[in-house]
Amino acid sequence: MAGSGSNFVLDKGYLVLSTYNSSAAAGVTAYRCVTANTTTGVIDLNGTATAATTGIVQENVDAAKVATGKVVANVRVLGISKVRVSDTPGSIVIGSKVAPSGTGANVGGVKLAVSTNIPVGICVGLTGTVAAGDLIDVLLTPGMAAI
Image 1 (spheres, rainbow, N blue to C red):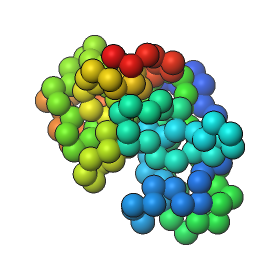
Image 2: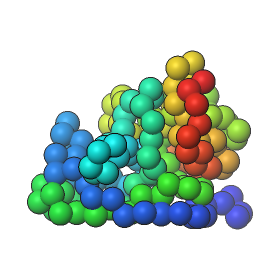
Image 3: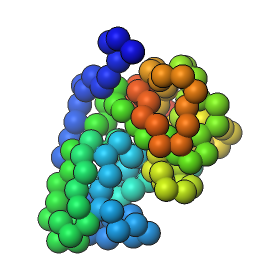
Image 4: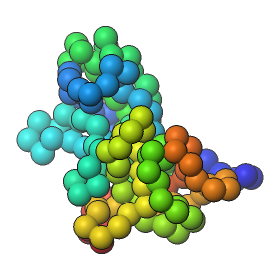
């Protein structure tokens, strides 16, 4: 698709929780939703549609480095970001509000937002029918209220 891709406005480095995504041994995986602890600012994977997302992590970091508790990861907090689609995406089309999802191999990816979800943003780019694991372009909308 011509002209598609990420357009960053604001990225920020966040310290990664040493037990980041304790259910997986992969470490930090790019293009997933993260949330920052409101006291410490340390990020962890956000796979809960009813929890606010701080941003989308933009890089991979292996589990051994994460375990040191000293890793700072690049997180897109404003602009357009690639985002991984969850295992249960629903019917996402351009203009759909999307929210984090906690299901399957693509936990921290996004799904079609429904009632009570706190959206991470609005889909602004995709190719064809969206399937689990695909990357889509999302306009990040921090502070959007639950649907």
